[in-house]
Length: 113
Length: 112
Image 1 (cartoon, rainbow over the protein chains, first blue to last red):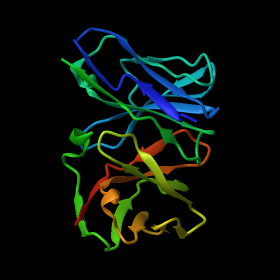
Image 2: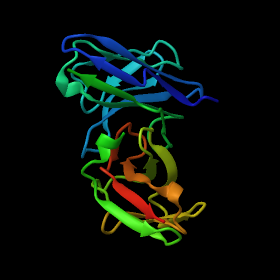
Image 3: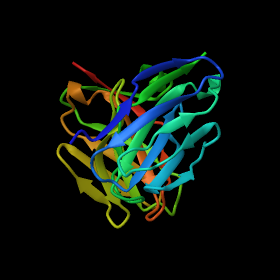
Image 4: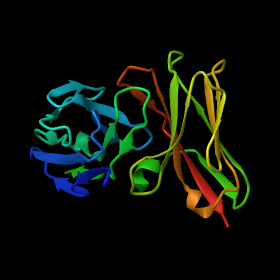
């Protein structure tokens, strides 16, 4: 199994540009989520999904959209990039929500200028 | 990556010594806890978990202790090795919910 994969690994955007961060998992996990990681702060939940066709907002959803058309894929879209979205983004999956181990992808480092 | 850990507390230990990393969790309703290891430029990696019906759980070279009275979690690493150098952070969860609360982490430096 490849586990959780993310692309790209690095990205630089100009303010106002849009882009999609890709995330895929091959473990048939129901639950997938997106986090951002900023210096001095714990991981913060952006959006999550409990199954194909079902998504919901996390702690910091503004400026981001998600969709879950398949069990495997959970892309994160930045609609109009802002410097405040400069961060490292991690996708995670687990068998189901709650008290199960989350597997994390390698991350995407995004810089918005 | 490196910039994420710039302002983290640091624990420096000699190679071969035992390490103890602490975490104070915030939600008294949390009943599931995880320790993660994050190496520079990589995603968090699961180390060990514990449920609230336990006080102690052991893995390979690692032990997690849970004190629910004071909402405290610790990770003990035996015979610390250079490959253990990383940022360690805890996460808490309430069963059946989607929300994990993540700590900010502690950087472990292993001195040769």
